[in-house]
Every structure is written in C-alpha cells, then in structure tokens.
Length: 452
Ligand code: ADP
Image 1 (cartoon, rainbow, N blue to C red):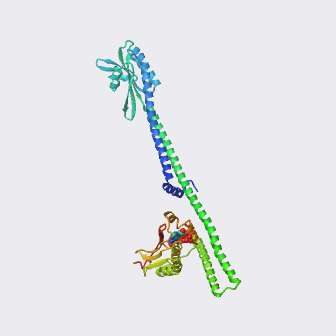
Image 2: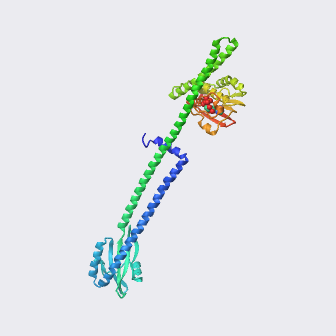
Image 3: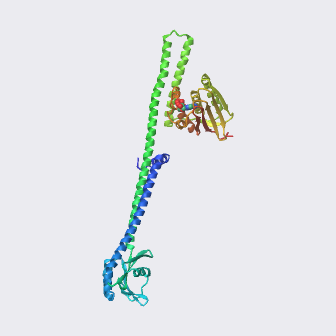
C-alpha cells in the first residue's frame, strides 16, 4: 500500500477527528508553525535593526575620522573632493558626499563627489544639518525613504581645534544592499517555513494512516477474539445435541422402553437434531452471504400471513416461559420482498425476544408509513446498553454475561438478518433500554403498484 493511499488517509483523518489524541497533534502542529512564524518574524526584525545600527555606526565613525581632515582642507575644495572620492570608492554605499560652508544666509556646497554639485545651494539636509550644528561633537543620522529605497543622511560639523565651526560634512548612503540581503533572508525563512509546513503535512498524513491501521488492528483483534469464541461455541453446540441424541438412541437400542417413552425420546431426538440444523443453517447462510450467493425471490405479497404464522409457531415456546404474545398487523398491505427470507427475519426477532425475556409481553406489529412497511418486534426482556446496541448487528456478537450465555446462540442471527433486510432494500434498527426491553424495527419497501 502506498504511503499516500487516499482512502486509508481519509479514513484515518475522520478517525483522528473523533479521537481526543488528534486535537493534541493538531495543537502541537499549529504551535510549532506559529512559533516558527513568530521567531522568524522576530529574527528578521532584529536583523534589520542590527543592520541599520551597523551602517549607522559605520558612517558615523567614517565621518568622525574624516572631520579633522576636512578641517585642514576645507579651503582646498579640489583636494577635499579627491579625498571624498577615495572614501566613496572604499565605501560603495555612499551615494553623496558633501562639504558645505555658510555664505551669507545660505549653505553652499564647496566639495562633493559629483563636481557639478559644487558651488550650488544645499538641499534636502535641513534637519540633520541643524542637529550637527546644535552639537558639533558628534555625527547625526536620519533615515529617509525615496521611492522603494531607504537612505541614511548623516551630518557632522567641521570644527577647528579651537572649536570654530568651519562647515558641515554630509553623506547620503543607500541601504538598498542591506535591505536586499534582509529581503533575501526573509525569503529564505519563508522557504524553510514552507518546508516545515510540508513536513508537518506529511507527518499529519502519516499519523492519519497509522491511526487507521491502529483502528483496523483493534477491530481485527476483536473479530479474531469473536471468531475464537465462535469456534469454541460451535464445537460445543454441535457436540451437545449429538451427545443428547446418542444418549437417547442408546436408551432406545437397549430396549425395554414403552411406546409412550419411546415417542418422548424420539421427540427429544428430533428437537436436538433441529437445534443442530438451525445452527448449521446459520453458518451456511453466513458463508453464502459472504460469497454473495444467497439468492432472493423478490415478489409482491401481503406480509400479514407470514408474520402471523411465525407468531403462532413460536407462541408455545413463549407461553412455556410465561410470556404473552400479541400480534397487530394492518391487513391488505403489499410489500416487495422475499417471503421466505422475511419469515427468517421475523423468526429471528421473535425467537430472540423470547430467548432474552423472562417476563411480560412480546408485541409484534406491522403497519405502513406510506412509503414503507414497518415491522416492530418489542419485548420486555433484558434489554441492551447503548454500547451493546452499537455492536449488536456485528458478526458473532453476543452480549457478555451469564444470562446470554445460558441461551443457545451463535451471535450470527442479527448479522444475517441485517444482511437479508438490506439486500431486500430495507433497514433494521433497534431501540433498547437495559433491564426494560427492546424494540427491533424493520422497514421494507412497499410494492410500487399497491402503495397506498
Ligand atoms: P444469538 O444467536 O446469540 O441470539 P443474535 O445475532 O440473534 O445471536 O443476537 C446477538 C446478541 O444480541 C444476542 O446474543 C443477545 O446478546 C443480543 N440480543 C438479541 N436480541 C435481543 C433481545 N430481544 N433482547 C436483548 N438482547 C438481545
């Protein structure tokens, strides 16, 4: 079976959703994912800050180092411009490098990387310039965004040894390289995130598959146990009527038995043979159903006669246990089914009702609900718990406990009944309260032409 067998996975997923363990798995998966997103986000934030600070410090110290030189050469703009070019060559992020001096009320560019800027008025540095003039001992940087690019504008006053301000050094640095690197890092972390997501999904599907196998294994073990019980039970059930029969036959062979006693013994032999016959019939039915070889003779008929005949056939057994039997079937209903199979179904329900009731009444009713024929067999017997009801129609299933064990049974009757009813287009259901009684309900299709 392939790792991605979709049926196994989807069965597993639906099982997982009904198990509390799943919620833990889902919670852990979401927690891992969310924490990764959070950490990745924080990291890229921290990295961006660190990068900015680094550029900031670098440009600051660059200017701090350059400022004394500028003080010496501020009056020789060609020399200063050449030094600026050297500096810019070594630091490719510098896009603008200027020295400005005050003339009348304007700030004039005296030295620059771009010679065309020289002797023009300074624009765009007002704020950072005023900071540098307010405190001439250090450099100041402000961030600026032009289009999609970020820049740092930095300013530092050019001061003589005596503290006289000669001018101001200004730089504009692009942060696009740093930003590109950070963007690349973020892209990488998203790729990793996607990978993690993929891994989680694989893990999830794998888990679903295992949950499905675990459930299958559990069920197989259950069925295996039921089969063991069944084999044990069948060999016992097959042997005990034989032992009884052989005992009676031996008695008869010994002779000296009166004709009345002989007829009693023959009657008991007949009953024992019958019991064995029923058991074998059940086993054969199971085999046929499983191989799809059980045949049905579907035709239209009135179910009343079948139900009444089964009821009257089983009434003596009920009366012997002190149970009353009542039958209430609407006359003139026509259903579409197999008559003999319906007999088998009704017999199973009524004989179960008798087997699993000690007092009270067994009521059999049959009505039409307009589209279906509803047969209901109700008893005031031992009843079933909700857990037992769930497993009731399973193969070999018998309720645990001495009360059920004391009755002859294979645990196949209800399974066979359900298969037969469903094959005839009907449904079986049960309503039961433990210790109070059970209602077994069969719904079968009405004949098309006679449906009222
Ligand atoms: P069995 O041969 O054991 O009667 P069935 O398949 O007919 O097998 O029934 C399965 C089990 O369901 C029974 O063993 C019994 O525990 C339970 N059961 C069936 N019918 C009734 C009922 N009317 N009341 C209570 N329990 C029932």
